[in-house]
Length: 370
Image 1 (cartoon, rainbow, N blue to C red):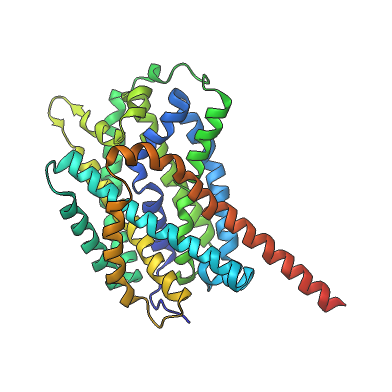
Image 2 (image 1 turned 135 degrees about the vertical axis):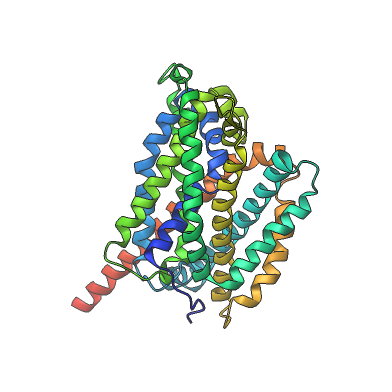
């Protein structure tokens, strides 16, 4: 049963993919990479780009098994009712946890950096209210809104990057290639599965895109642009703040924006960075929220997913509070294990689905020949 009536264009999917890749990564990516590879974090990030695109290629190939079905439907179709149902539940749990985590990130950032002293519950309620409003309007409206916000997002991000280059000092990334191989490998895994792995949410969007002949190429171009933007932020963080502060400042990109000072006139424009981050994080969270309610409706064989939006909003409100005791616990404990979630749902499960599909297809072909 087709529960989603809306359709988005390839361009809208590209923009949503760009927002999802950058998302909350714009703030936390430098700290995540610098904590493992230190001065060599930019090298690990560059290596991770082709590997991340290869991971996306795997997910696209899995989606193309049947482009009209989501990962929830594909899992049951390929792996059977019970095993496929277990895989579908795993994806749904990840979508729920991810949406709750991003809401919590918005709350922590706003309460610690901008609206200090504001109760976190107020920020959380405002974020979820906007998410519910967006989901009630539908996937197509989200896609059109993403097109409207893209110029503002691009302008703010380009301003941040261009205005920071005068502050860069290349000697801060020395010594080069001084990171032990195990630490470098672990950091490369972060660079691959932390931003690129979360593209698995598009398993729930891909069937509702109006397909074009050059669609796959456009997807990879948009993700490449997003990856280059993330790596520029990381490189500037290393060359402006240094490896130590990039590692220990969880919101390194926001601190970078505070360092902009052109002739003692153009300064304190960190609000632009905050605006860029909130725009991208909103659309990323909305996609995970949509993926959870749509996937739940498909698994339970409901006629519509819209009645689930309000109950799930209350669930996310509570989950975002319970997911971490405080921001210190969130910063120190969650990122180390998040990469495992991304690896499982962006690489392991799609690879298993592809292998099982081709094995079953070959067995069926051989049986027909006999």
